[in-house]
Image (tube, rainbow, N blue to C red; front, side):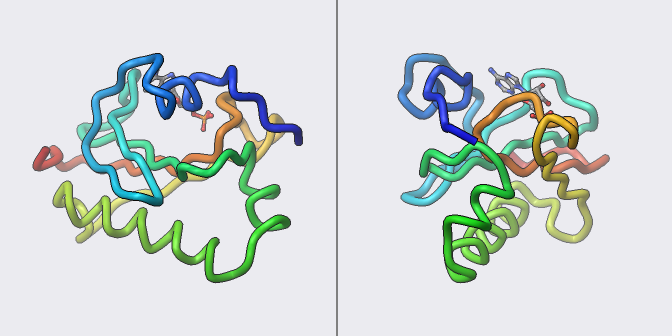
Length: 114
Ligand code: AMP
C-alpha cells in the first residue's frame, strides 16, 4: 500500500499535530491513544514511513521487524506494564486498521508510570 504522509501519525512525527508522548528514541515514538480502551493504552509507531504490518514485513529484514518488537517491549517496560499487557497490531482495512502508519497498541488494566 502506498504510504501517505497525510495520515495523522505522520503529522505527529512531523510535529504538525501534538501527541501525549511517553517515549521516543531514534527508532520509535510512543504516545497515549486519544480514545483509550484501558487504563494504559499506548501506541508505538516506527519512525520510518510504512503503512501496514504486511508492508513492513515484505519490505524489511527480520532484524528490522524484530527491532520494532523489541522496542514495543522496551516501551512497555518504560511505562511499567511489561509484567502483562496486550499487544495488538491491526493490519489493513480488513484487519480493522484505521490509521495507515504502522503501529502497535499496548493495552493494560494497570495505570502507566508515565
Ligand atoms: P487502528 O484501528 O489500529 O488503526 O488504531 C488507530 C488508533 O489511533 C485508534 O485507537 C485511535 O483512537 C488512535 N488515534 C487516532 N488519532 C489519534 C491521535 N491524534 N492521537 C492519539 N491516538 C490517535
